[in-house]
Length: 124
Image (cartoon, rainbow, N blue to C red; front, side, top):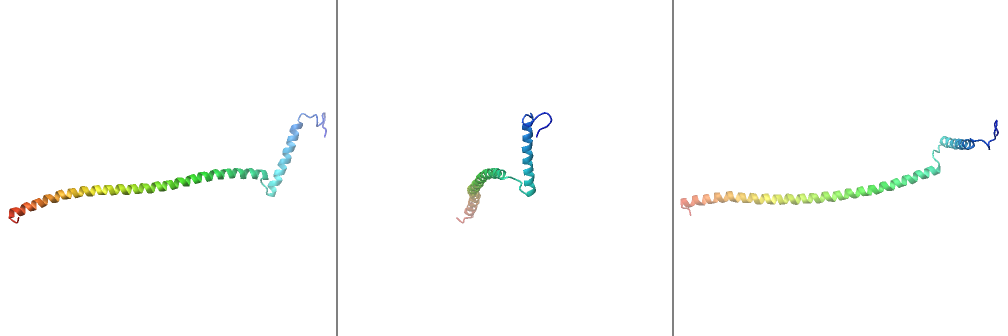
């Protein structure tokens, strides 16, 4: 394939011409694959599967960690509820003791007043 003035072997653009020829062949192959429904080569599919595998492994690790955190939070919530119940019982006991003391003070005054009144009446 000679042109005016030089041969293909001596052509300064020989590498570019060959690269373009290779690219056009590759593009023709890709067009045929797309037309037949083969969108990806086996090599491309293998790389995608490898990438997906690593992404799934990373996801599974994060998912397991997340599930572990949920379990820990459930245990923490249960422990917190138990502590709240104990605190409420302690508060209730303290309030009850205070109310009993207050009630005794009030009733003792009434009992003494009644006893004094009864003693003045001569019942005792």
